[in-house]
Length: 158
Image (cartoon, rainbow, N blue to C red; front, side, top):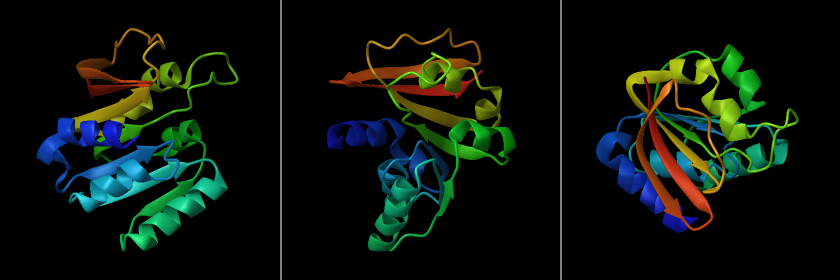
């Protein structure tokens, strides 16, 4: 995880400074918290699991950082979200959703996701290297890197 996180922030470089960050499927919040520690202006964490959201809040307090944490299903959140984010992190579950589609596929097909990105914004998506992804109709692939059991895609809306 540390290697993947280091690689992600190496890809993003100084674009993190002053960025408005959205961390979807936030888990422990490590990506959003790292962004805040590197100078991001704000972060919003979206996590459906209440215990994980509590862990994010504890991790923020430990790091003396402030951010918003929403306990919500990511796709429900996307239907009602507004605003513009400079960086969106998404580390969806590797297993299939109830529909049988991968969470990655559902995310990339979701039109609301691209609308949440600022004009020069970027989506940082983590997935399994062997997971097939749909055509990137709404997305331009900027970079793809494999790190063992994780592939990191850097995407921009078309």
